[in-house]
Length: 536
Image 1: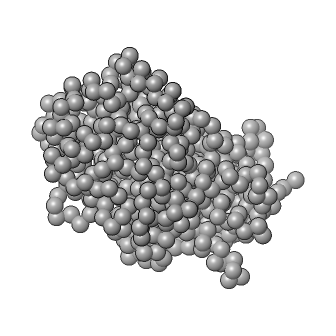
Image 2: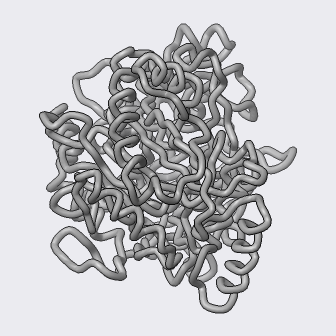
């Protein structure tokens, strides 16, 4: 038996949940959503502070590695990606950021009609249910709950005081008229609980929307074609293989790593490269898997005896235990923390038109994505990432086995200009961290003590930089571009019945966290598809 639906959405991440949820609002349209992971609805997902249990390991996480990075002293990097309904919105730090308006205007300038800031703002607003901000930039009543933090951490005031002392602007809303400045982030939470894309778009309708079928534990292995038209998907559950058919479209929403992987496994990509793996070409499309972009990120770390931070020490664990009790009682306190509570956007040079670095100030000591526990070290961290790197990486197949992880090469510091820009980002972040308010609560500088010269900074950057979890671009949107994979309607060039709806379509990396933009892409895709159906 083969099930048939109007639309088959492959990948239950941020884009997939949004497009499947919106398409299935029409009772006359049937939608199947395939997700390789689980339901993403248990306490470890819903409790914000539990993100540390997921990001550092394999709970709801693909936990990919990169290939050795020449620009990072040949280190192997780490790429956590969500493996559950909600995708990476089920395991991320919940920071609600859209990027800079100039990012979208640039997409439109590249020929991607319909993707300017004015075009996409209505979809950001449509997706959003902002608990506190009401103005022309924000939405109410959308599926994605956005709120202020309920961690009640006094370190917010210390961070803001340090920002003032370092003469940086204070910004109350990074998604309004202006982005530059520092402040406390809004988060995708509601009443102190994580609000993933699945919680907004899918979970409420899994039992009462008969035209929506959600299959978890379903690992897609190939796209089924009839000539040049996508008509279905093969997937595995356990040791069994199944087929599911699409009358109208197959929609790929597996993310920047696994969408190009599934395309290549299905014979869509560089024909010569696929032939070497024994994969017959369905359609030669050399841009598949190319143009990978990600934010290179450096983390400062400081020990502190101030009573604001959790950690693996007696006082730190005591705070965690008290926080769990408070969370169970009132959904407030440390367990509602997204860890990256404060931050913002800065320019490393005053002549820049837009901020070029982003900070994430964390209420704990973080080393190697939390994979190296800082035993008996309580303190805080501060990330600085480069927002628009020049380096371009790629994703490709290790072999023709669909269950094997893809080979991931972000090519960090492949362009030397990125290293120079990160040196400037290091210095501007140090200016904040050395401000009196923060210096007063530091007891030691763990990673950067004595690092002063540009050469020393470059050395420590190569030793410690890795991702801040924002890979995009591997199925880029474009017109009259031989490396473009999809058109502005997100349809795969040269094929029929096949669309891509996730962060892989971004032609260039946006200046900020990528979760909200990916949900926006899902909203806009659903709107375009509905318009096409109405037009017949």
